[in-house]
Image (cartoon, rainbow, N blue to C red; front, side, top):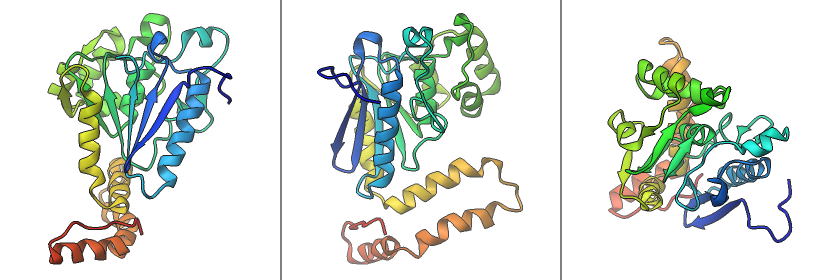
Length: 260
């Protein structure tokens, strides 16, 4: 997918040290996801996973809004903002291996909420609002909303949100810990970057393995849990970074991670 010549990029990508910041950039359309934006996000997440010097990703929206979901004008023309094998926004079906934080201002609705749910952590403004209003449009929250929300919040709350399509304040989401950190309005990205820097100070192989165990272990049986975990964590234990971490502790200095 190519960007129209002279047009403002629909996704802004910026490196801030070990943190890759993705900004959905269609503020006039509340950052509704187009097919082009979906492919740009997928490309940026491939970069995030491919670069050992990038430890954390942050995704946010321009103009004081996170994302209002898929672009309905495009949908009416038969366009779906999905990437094969990756789903809506090039993200929801196959999130990156690298930790990803959603920095939410304004509205995170429909697919926008589903993008946030596909992230590992959510930082939101106290004035932000979440919601799955698909039922009000004759649709369903099939981009991960129905699958993920019931695992992140109490079942009956997930059912109420999915069946009513009502707006849900970030302050309420924080009470059930769906939102990990609340910020003042306009400060969600700053809060997410602060969290990202805390994460990025740690060993990248250990971060990726920790995320993988947390994500994949949900359906492991009791008998296989430790064996399957060992397959993932054993290479980390034998890594150069593990040795560096021990040396840095003994020498009372900050570790120098290489991702190997």
